[in-house]
Image (cartoon, rainbow, N blue to C red):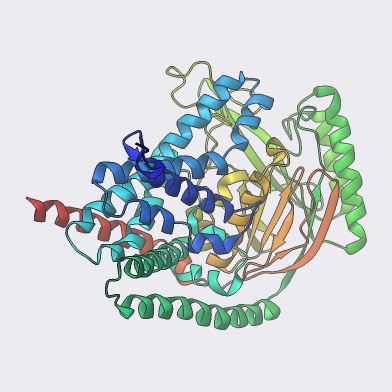
Length: 517
C-alpha cells in the first residue's frame, strides 16, 4: 500500500504543505535584490495561505515558521561570509549565528499564520485582518531587540515609482499592507474556485480600488514633487568611491595610500565644480583631528579643493575616567575648519558594539577599532553655507525614524555614507540601496549615497536612482540636487498607520481570545 507524498508528515506538518511554505519563502526572497522580481511579492504569500487552510493553530504556526526560515536564510545568507572573512570565526559558528538570527526573524511570520488561523475559527472574513497583522509585526520587528527592519515587504517595490509615493503618508508599511491584502484576495479567490463556493466581489473591488488609488496618487505626487524640485535651489554634490580593500583598510602602512587615493579622485571631481564632496563611512581609517600628520594631509587637500567636505572617520572623547569611541562624519568648510560632527546613533550589534558579551564571549566585534562605539545624538543635522544636511551612517538608512527626525529638524538634503565592502558581491549592497529609496520618498528629500566599494548613487525626491556606480571600482559621481523645504505628512506625523495596525491587531487578538472564553 503506497502513501501519497503529500500525506507524509515531517515535524508535525504534511510534506505537501511544508513545500508550499518553502515556495512562499523563496518567492518572498526573489522579490528583493539581486533577483528583483518585484511582482512575485504580490503572490508570494498565496502558497502559505493555501498551506494553512483548514490546519490547526499549531500546524499553521509551524508552516509560517518554515516560510520565514526559508525566506530569511536566503535573504541574509551573506552574513556568513561577513563573519567568516572579517570576524575570522569558524564556519560552524558563522552558520550557527545566522541560524539564530533567522530563527528569531521567522517567529514573526509564525506569529502571523498562528493568529490568522485563530481568526479563521471566529470569522469567515478573517483574511481582512492579514494586512494589519503583517504590518503590526513588521513595526514591532523594527524596534524589538534594537530593531532589524531589513527589507520589509514594502521595500520590494522600490522601483515602482508610481506605487511607492504613498509612503509620504503611510511610510513603507502602507506598501506592505497593500501587498498582503492583494495576496489575501488572490488566495480567497483561488480557494473559492477550488472549493466551488461563492466568492464576494467586494474584496476584489476594495483592494482593486486601493491599488488604483495608490497609482493615481503616485502619478499626481510625482508631477507635484518634480515641479517643486525644479523650482528649489540646487547643491552640486560629488560622491567619491575609493574602493579601498577592506583587508588593507586599517593597516597603518596603507593609511597614506588611502588619503592619496581619495585626494586624487576628489581633485578629478573639481572639473564639474561641486559645492560638496562626500567621502564614505570611515574613509579616513585613523582618528581625524588627532593623528597630526595624516590630518594635515587631509586639510591641505580640502583647502586645495576649496569646497565643502563630508568625511567619515572614527573619533573619541573623554567620558569621565575612560574614553568613548564613535563612528563619525565631519563637515568641513573650504578652509578646513570643522563645522560640525555627527556621531552614528544606531550601531550595528557585533559590528560596532558587543551586546550580551558575557553570554556570547566568543563573538567579538567585526569592525577594527579601539573598544566599542557609543551612540551619538539622535536627529542631529549639520549646516553647510546656510543649508542643513542630515547624515546617516551605514545601515541607519534602513530606520525610517532617523531620517524623518533629521528632516523634521530642518534637513534639506540627506547624505548616506557607508562601507559595504563587507558584503562582497552578494545581494546585500543592492538590498541596502533599495531601502534608501523609500527614505527619499517618505520625506521628499534627495539622498546622496557614498559607499567605499559601492553602490554609490543619488536618489531624487521621488525615488529615482541616478548615477549608480558598479561594485569594487574607483568612481566619482556628480549631480546637482534640489534642496527641499516642504514637510510631508509622514515627516510630520510619522508611523501613524503602522501604530494603528499594531492597535487594530491587538484589539482583534483580545476580542478573539475573549470570544472563545
